[in-house]
Length: 504
Image 1 (cartoon, rainbow, N blue to C red):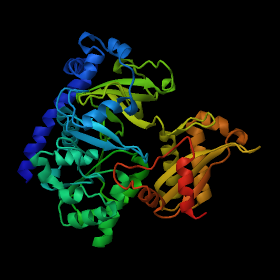
Image 2 (cartoon, rainbow, N blue to C red):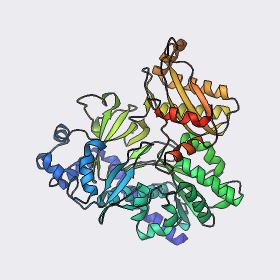
Image 3 (cartoon, helix red, strand yellow):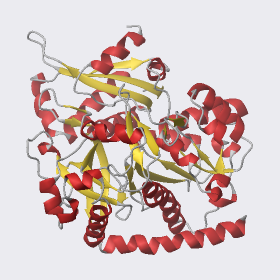
Image 4 (cartoon, rainbow, N blue to C red):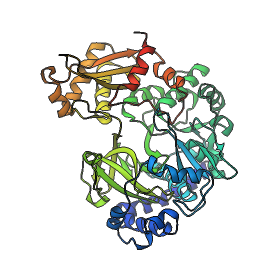
């Protein structure tokens, strides 16, 4: 196995040279993909509607094709779900990634073309390993197994030719044989729908394996890790899997979970690699050991545009191409892909941390923020504040959500938080003060509204009992890797649903 590992490491590192090429010529690579996408789709129903044959520049494309969201593409996708082809993309599309992103009751079915599978999602998966192998040549990850926390929905058949499931389930069902050989647990367990039973079965099935790397959302990985330690009676995961050296993570900010993972995996050289992979496409990979920012992957069959967040609700928003973006400004991502998503607003916001090469950090969701009083608190602000409050009070949080408290009579407004801790803060009121003070330090709009409690009073924070969010997700039938607690909301819907579970 060591020889296989060495050969594979050498092979994967060759890809690094191609990555370096698009890092050096990013605009050229993006323009080439733009033309490839437009010419590929010119004879589709969509391509004919917008006369793709006559589009020669990105500027013409932007002028002619309106920005899209799931609702605007839904009529086309519903026809594709029934088996119609050549609607948005020319190749046969049989697979759809069922996505909700948060706890929204409405499911989205994102088309996954053969090109999107191979040139985007699987290419991203291989690049994760390539970058890791390049950064850590002495690794031994292929001498053991990859523990993959799959999706919460199995593959379901829509008709003779169409199937849907969580993105992770779609990927697992289509993995090449060599990748399936290295994955654990068995597919019958990985794609179980019952997430509680699944955690038990996954733990039991993997504790005897030589697990060298883990892929999964931090929240659910911690649930599995605790189950493994409960079954084995061990103190940490290295006592179960001594060769564990790599953790691939994504979907939520990892910073607030870092200390918990250090306790679960007390290895000084444990490698953490963040990825930005969604049902709509694979967008970014953390390519540097010393930095958490992610390299924007530019040769995956995706053409990018970026919309300044303040223009999101404008009647005629003007998007920017890659060469026009600025550092440290919030943008909504717009994508056109080799699965037929055209000028599609995916709902995530990012900031560029570097323009040479183009590196990003995820700052939140276009719909997940609090701006009831002009305070403009985004998820990135909340994550920084809660991380600092945890660090200074010895706490470890499990999940949280927050929303506005609206003006009532002469009372000021505020923010109401529900936080569930894995490790309680040594002083809860101090925790709240640090949370509040950090938000004031990093967000001048919040600070201005907090001045003398003028518009915002001190945050109201509820210390939620164990398993509050787990029980809430379970009550909504939303247990699983792709279902996440909405961190921030500009309405009270989620908080008002959860408050009764606190027995206040």
